[in-house]
Every structure is written in C-alpha cells, then in structure tokens.
Length: 239
Image 1: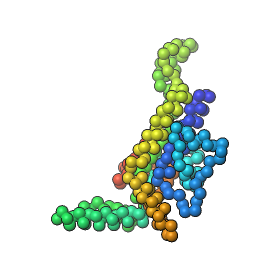
Image 2: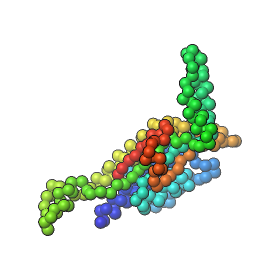
Image 3: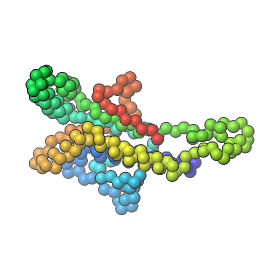
Image 4: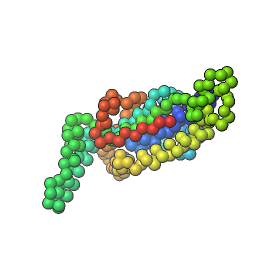
C-alpha cells in the first residue's frame, strides 16, 4: 500500500508539472498579475523531473493544483484561438492568399474562409486538446503470480516482476515530462504565444488582448466520442 501511495504521489506531481508546461507555454500573464511565487520550502518542488520551469500566472497555476492530491480524473487542457484573434489571422491569411494568387495567376486559397466562418459564429477556435490520464490496472507480469489457486503459489516465481518500483516510475515520468516540454514548443500554438509575448512587452501603452485562451477540465466533452473538432490535434498520454 505504501508503494502505491508513493507512486501516486509521483504521478500527481507529474500531472501538475505537465499542466504548468502546457499553460505556461500558451497563456500570457494578465497585466498587473504577479507570477506564482513558490515559498522557500517549495523550491525543491520546482525541480521535479529534472526540469525547472518559469513561474506561471497565479490564477493559471492554481487550476491544476487539484491533481496533486487527486488523480482519479484525467487532466484535460484545451487551447483556443480567441474569436478576435481568429478574425485577425483569417484576414491576414486571406490577404496573403490574395497576393499569392495574383502573383501566380490563380485563385487564392480558400483555407482562410474556415477561420472566418468560425470567428463569425462567435465562438473560439479549438487549437489543441491535451489529455493526461492515470490508468490503474494489474501490475506487469502479475498474470501467473496473482491468479494462482494454491495457498503459496503467489510467491513462487522469483523472476516475475509483480510491481513497478518508485525509481522506475520516476524515470519514466522524467521522460514523459521532458518530452512534453519539447513537443509543446514545436507546435504552431507556441509560435502564437511567443508572438503575443513580444507584442505585450513592446506595446506598453495599450496591450492587445491575448490571442490564446485555455480551459482546464476533468473529462473530455461528449462530442469527442463521436468526432474530433475541426483542425484539432488531440494528444493523449497515459501513465
């Protein structure tokens, strides 16, 4: 029982770390909102999984803290392009397509029309959906040792691994967390975040609204069982 609680503690820390990785690379801090400051006793917590992150917005970071103590539900993070930003991107894409079409002597690409119609509908455009889920199940290699009918058969095979030790779980979580950190920074949404961050630092007088919004949930929406959202990469990780 102690081993299970310790492993679940590692998994809970991984949930929070992954949430901070995604939100910290997608959501800008609100103007005048201080970053979440860790107390001195929590400095070591920032180095979990050999990866220290920049401070995230206090309100944003608080949304994923619940998974540190309760991992029974999946962590779902949805990344949206706001309606205003979608309209701006569609206008820029349409202008670029018109120039390219005129130069090539052909009609411009109509891909920007999809963004325009979605923005005109008054809804945000879903860019990404990240799902992290902890699946409980029988330990690896436990088929023969756990199902024996004899009284002493459960401890018969010394070569069968009946559980994952804490060190092995932690090493696997290190790979998961660091891979997520790298992968989240090569996607188009991160480029939008970087561009918005540069604009926010240069335009001190009047900052434009952030182009990206995130929502944190404990379950997938019902429509995911039927079809995927338009243009949305759904990334799911299981521990």
